[in-house]
Image (cartoon, rainbow, N blue to C red; front, top):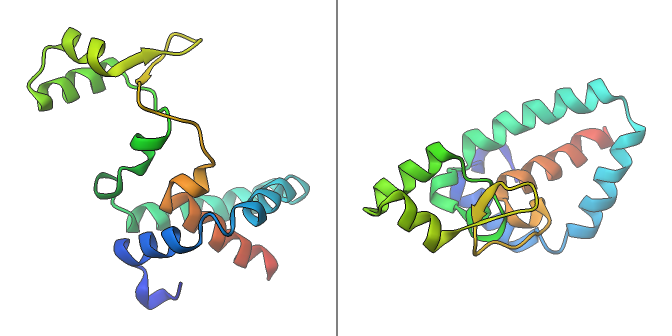
Length: 134
């Protein structure tokens, strides 16, 4: 992805086309970062995190919420139930489960590799691989 096509739609299209193909390479790349300077990795990751999430509109994509188990807070419950026009307890009964730590999550979720699930994470990992090769 070049600097001139860093839009939400282009990033999501790149993710859809390449995330699964690059999954093994990204896994091994991320494991290799443990051997690198932590400060350098953290600095690059922070820059790329800010860049990725300035491009990706999470509310437009929402893939994480469809495929992972994000924890739902009491504040989230009130906001989402209100948005759906449901009572709090009705929303909890219909859509939430508790995990082993008693955190609530949406009951339709599965675990998956973050770069395969989230276009912003995929972008971050792909860009980090490019930068770390320099």
